[in-house]
Image (cartoon, one colour):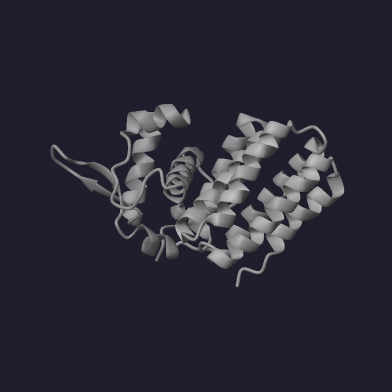
Length: 226
């Protein structure tokens, strides 16, 4: 049975230590999705993670210990020791999938992106759209399933920053990291269909057309997962 601490509702877990622990879990999951760390890799020390995330080192240590207990991480002792991403990360994460909680978080993320698009349509500098278009073009050319997932995740992170700034990017990173733990990774065919929605979104943002841009965001979420 999966430890319930490994599941994420939309910011409704009780207990004062939960938010920091959830942040650690979601950001490590996001790092794995973005390929900045891979199964078997050593994580930065707790003090480094604490500084990066802006939370206490003791909170990070407790979160890492919980992830070790869940099987997501391995703790090794000795001169070459440390905390490592579990070699069977994907297998363990599959046990934590929760469609109901994922649907709630995904709906929240949809609301966030629709709001950002509605607020920013017609006001996004062209160079920001060009950087996003580069990701769309790269997705069209990639045949590597893990690279496609990485690029799609980067697109949504960069979109949040382009439309809302660095603080909104951090908020989106937390949501996307949680979804990495709760949802099965979409198939490459699904990512490619969603990338058409990305392209449509950028076209409409470039035109300053708010309603079609919002529809493109919603169409992305309605892409058949099968």
